[in-house]
Length: 203
Image (cartoon, rainbow, N blue to C red; front, side, top):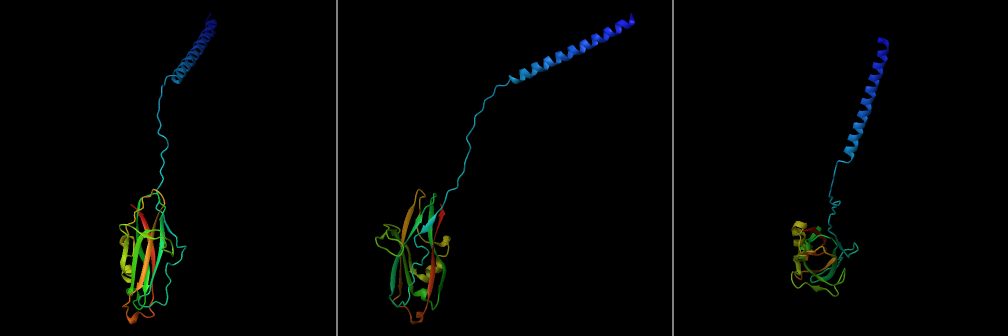
């Protein structure tokens, strides 16, 4: 009798274990099913942000050619030419004119009078059609020597032009030089040179 009861107990134990496993699997499946369908959600999204820098652009129509190349000057010699400067930037800016690499011998630059006027019309080398601005036309009036020593960078540059940045804008500069009628004998054979630079910085 004792030997027949032992297999029966083992079978019952196996049945209990199998039942527990089946019940556990069923419970686990119920949890997974419940988890899969228990969350509500909502979201809102702001589209990708973008950044683009503005520009400051400046050019002229000189084709890399010097505005003046005058020789054989004598007291009273004079000349006038124009140059068109164009702003193409997208930012509002302020444009200043200054001299670079100025040099002179026999102090000739001190006897050359320089006049710079801003306006519209005309272009490189020719002032045909030039019209001075109604206000703020005068940029500089004085000697070449003083211009070269005082207007040497953007910080000390001259002019009142302030492009808005809303489109292409052009300003024409009329430049006139005159060798002083009272220039001293000592300037004979003298030389003078200077580069003209227009620079724009956003405002």
